[in-house]
Amino acid sequence: MAQSTAISAGISGSARFLLDCKATGQSCATNARYALPNLESKSFLCGQNAGLRNKAILRQGANARTHKATLKERRQVARATAAVKEPAVGEKAGVVENGKDKERVMIIGGDGYCGWATALHLSARGHEVAIVDNLVRRTFDDQLGLQTLTPISSVHTRVKKWKQIKNKDIKLFVGDVCEFDFLADAFQQFEPDAVVHFGEQRSAPYSMIDRSRAVFTQHNNVIGTLNVMFAIKEFAPQCHLVKLGTMGEYGTPNIDIEEGFIEITHNGRKDVLPFPKQGGSFYHLSKVHDSHNIAFACKAWGIRATDLNQGVVYGVKTEETSLDEALINRLDYDGVFGTALNRFCVQAAVGHPLTIYGKGGQTRGYLDIRDTVRCLELAITRPAKLGEFRVFNQFTEQFSVRDLAKLVTEAGRKLGLEVKSINVENPRVEAEEHYYNAKHSKLIDMGLEPHYLNDSLLDSLVNVAIQYKDRVDYEQIMPGVSWKKIGAKPRTGVALAKS
Ligand SMILES: O=S([O-])[O-]
Image (tube, rainbow, N blue to C red; front, side):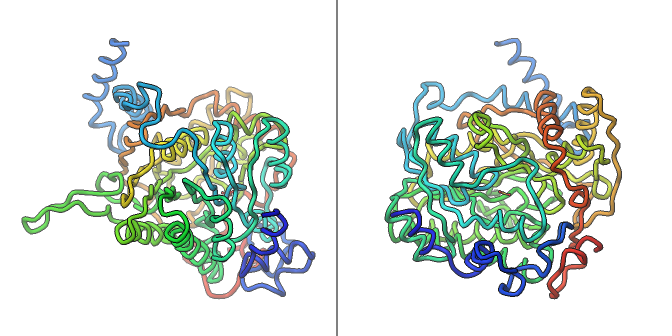
């Protein structure tokens, strides 16, 4: 199908109005249910010895499994855990175990932060890649007056540049997966072996701005995923759904977090059940709903799926996105879309104090974007079986917000920057000191070799931030979306900044 046909046929509903507004230069505010009244607002409303040593560290590591252990102790244990794992059989032999060597992979949300890096990674490794995206992420920036730190090219320029550099085609379907006819058409044309679904509204603060953003997030995410499931059932029943979930689905229970399932004994009977979910925002809850829908579809229809409960991603460069400035990835530093470590590195680069929300004891799983793309490759080339619903916890290390602030302060100091921190009132409703120990061994068992957070990554991230620091808008740095103050009334940029 010609790209232009995809564009005109594929966009409807909320995404169509957003794109129409953009194309015609009209104010979205007057046209659209989910648009903001003030588009111009700049505020962000809108060897053996080593093996023995590692095993010894693990034996001593019980204490390090709790939040009371020092950062250094916990990192030692994380590394030792990875090091004593036997490589997966397929990995030893250098072969793909059950997937095909080259898959036809549809990447929904392939113009976004994780999606773009994944599209290039898979294309570079010989897979046939198609990007499906309604480009609404770019429209959120236009609505809220935000801008990625890095100057990203249009998706069309990105794909053309990739063809020039690598002589590889990436097909492009611009449209909204909430529009089933568009999705059905893309499925029938591309005939995917695997669908990676990144195409969701992925910001917790965005979903907590006001009623319309909460509704948009759950509609876009839950209905989009339902449509993808139906497209698989109807047009590609062998196709493997690789769905991006989030570690935030689990919340912060006062017990270890398992990888998807937990064995429970209750009144003398035993069963393996889904691990309890306690999403902390309307966004996180949209992913919880997705997980339940997908698990049900695997059981009822016999389709195959992998739910990747991803931690917080940091970094910007991958092998492929570094090849040319036109391939550069986005890097968000604002209070709505910026993730913790990325935000801190940009703050350090521009001399803004690091913004620690509340006490800073909030602990989560983190991973380098270079590991995100590798995890996706592992999931695709070693697919779930028909009828199977797999869950992997996709992160490599745990940090508290305080830990991250310390690491960035130290990295900044080595680069000659004076980095300060401030504790700001926590805009979220969440525990600020808590137990956290989440299992994450399945991807390592499959062959993931993590890029642990180290000085060189921090240096490079801070240096990217220094390179583009003239693009930083200081007004976007502080958090402005309050979990408690969310209301039914649409929020404007000014109101949001002052909340
Ligand atoms: O592209 S995204 O995930 O901000």
